[in-house]
Image (cartoon, one colour):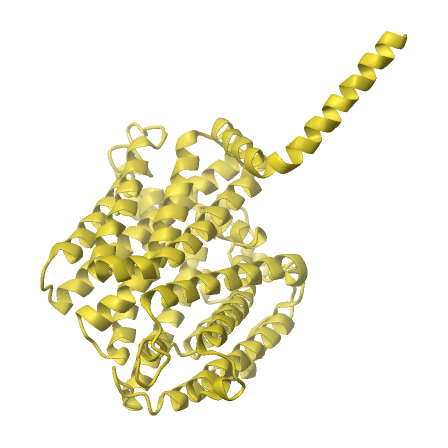
Length: 498
């Protein structure tokens, strides 16, 4: 008995020591085990696809491309800030037609595959576009916009397609749904942080055109995902049914959209985004102007954006842990009000009031960017959840993509409206006298959606918003389960604080 007790106690000591050692190593070992678990339960190609698309293409590549495009328009194409706003809206058009990409990957397989060909197509389009912009010595502005839009289309197609893959795996492995969305959120956040952190340095070293050349690498990795992705081949697909499926989905969406319970909050979402005018290009030109502005370097700009992405992540975490159960109307009131007030930080900066309080420009801009991004995320999260509550059964995926397109149209309207405001106030590459007025007008417009809150239901995220006649089964709507590609992905993104 003594020997057994000694052995038992020694085992406990070993276990305790192991746990103590594990506490320090868990930070490194646990993620590896987690990745292995996801790869074994689903397939390693899916995990690779999420990391490549969310982490490298959208996260890292998106951050790098944003900073590179700002300097490309300013230093290479030499356009005015108002024009840069308009052109930025044009390149975002592929994201407005996301329902089209979703329907294509759902109902129109190529050579018997639903997902793989679209990854290959997306990667090829983006890679070729980025290489042409990078290698062409004197590319005309129209052609540059064409290739930038094509590159954006490639990223949008890959986004919809990986959403479909994740959603299908979440359906077939319900216990892993949260883990898969955590993988998406983690990949995107880390990728964006890394991209913004090195973006300024890379722009300084190789220039914006060189950055576009590097962006061909993430595009090539998306193409590689299409090659290695495990997907069963569909034999004897009836292509004659494609038109009927498109028409059925379109009729169902139109019927739903006509309901006052749906179009009223949709109208609010559009107007709240459209009235929040985007004058970021005017601010960027002022940031980098050595005469009237702070004269930030490329490295400083990249670091400022990286801090902003941290603020956005904090906003998502705050919503997930504190605010997610609050009624939509109450939460949108406070976030919209704070969003308008946060814009006053830009006004203080442009009027140089921060220097009167002995606060350096760089430190003040870092605070401004992080606060603005955090409040912007808090404003966006309830809109995402509200959109998910408006989706009828059977066409959730396609209808959610439609709602996201409406929101993207609002963002486009804000960008073009901001460009028009910069043009009217004669804010140019070197003239910033009226920039303070543009900021003040933007801030006033940001709070005007408070008068439209009556369009938003008083319900909370745990309540049903749709009328009972829309809460029918999938069989009644005549659609198939694989169409639920956007809803599962995006709603779980909200639930996991992405």
